[in-house]
Length: 175
Image (cartoon, helix red, strand yellow):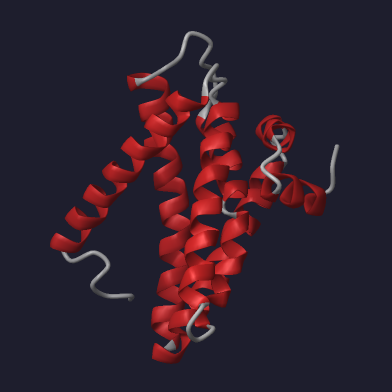
């Protein structure tokens, strides 16, 4: 079994074996949560100058989005678009998607003037590719295209959920 650091590096290198290991290690759920927390904290540094409440709210929102997003991907991937060999439970998917956040640590560089947005964009694309690989591995898909479609549909669904949440006032207040 690889160390936590080796797993993060393997995921950042987009190695399917790293995702497989995380998927099958039930003890890796807390490690996935740590990855999401660290990445979310790094990203939240951008809003720190706007106040501690917004900073903490951004962190909490990131953790909630991880769990809800994993659930949405799980429903779409196992109920709506399963492959012939699809198997995987919610926690397996949650672990792989949690680790897939790892490239987002470079999002902290968004605070760098002029090029920060470019680095943050590259980190987001990198994390998206990692998520596709994580979905493919966790749901035992035979092809990457199915994982891409599931991720795109889940992304659209999450946008709709976030829009509905803001319409009813969730997200408008941090506390």
